[in-house]
Amino acid sequence: MASVTFEHVFKRFGDVIAVNDLDIKIEDKEFLVLVGPSGCGKTTALRCLAGLEEISDGKIMIGDRVVNDVAPKDRDIAMVFQSYALYPHMSVYDNMAFGLKLRKVPKDEIKRRVTQAADMLGIGHLLDRKPRQLSGGQRQRVAVGRAIVREPKVFLFDEPLSNLDAKLRVETRANISKLHLQLATTFIYVTHDQVEAMTMATRIAVINKGLLQQIDTPQTLYDKPNNLFVAGFIGSPAMNFFKTKLVKGDGKLFVDGGSFKVEVPTDRNNVYMPYLDKPVILGVRPENIHDPNFCPPGIFAQNIDGKVDVTELMGNEIQLYVTAGEHSFVARVDPRTKVRMGESIQVAFNMGNMHLFDPETEQAIR
Image 1 (spheres, rainbow, N blue to C red):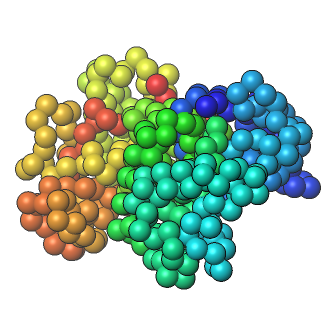
Image 2: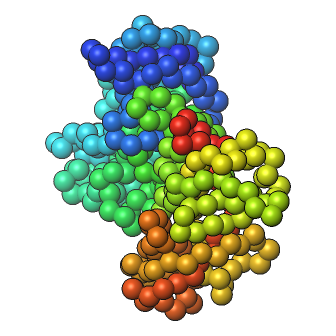
């Protein structure tokens, strides 16, 4: 097993900087997810690690070994691509065994590894089939199995669930997490789906425009985003942002959004005081906006008035699209809430979980 280190890695395509000073230490046996919008550089970083792209500057290490000039086949990694890349004329067994045959691994050892991986993935009964006889989920598991039999130090996954339907994505997501526990090796996983990142990762690296924005555990990224981009990217639906101003009255601090004015918890006054009478961006997650009739106990609730534009009944909750003056936002409220489109509503912001951001630097104020 091995750790992976990116030391100030750059990747340039002409004038375009796809990976910009990436500096990450991925621990042995960690499940790290690189997440960000399409074109942010996460797949390029993965391809640099695999040796499929040559880095422009910096250093990549697998364990204690610098691999900048090491051929892909000698890096002791295995990669699962977005396209399954299975040989259509070969059986499942031969697809999984092909890489081992090229390395002249003994036949008995090949059989042991392929059988073991197939049983682990629940595809032992499919070994004689051709890829065309498999479903999308089965093909995806064959692609993962082909990587497992290599017994590499590091597994690389490049959006492997993108071609699966919603139900199968959830199922396969859980299978990959179980696989990580079984294999006890280093997983590096690329996705643009923040739900995949939140549910699978031990740590998440959020990347935008080639730059690392923040790296931390899923819960920390959710609770304490460093900036507007991370706050808006992590969480579904995304965090609501309001252009507001920090004002003072009766010895208390308020966030003034024009059409609403909500009090700031007193334990944050000292942190926010330097921004008094200045513009700030208020961030409130949809799950921290409640129907006042069904507020959780013990929260610091501040009510505002609005009008419901759209309602989406989700079964366990209702998502409300609300307009309050010039502001539009999403609320996830209790399913017992009785409201229809076009009606006026009062909602409660849980200000204990509020976020404030500097509109110039876009950094969190805390």
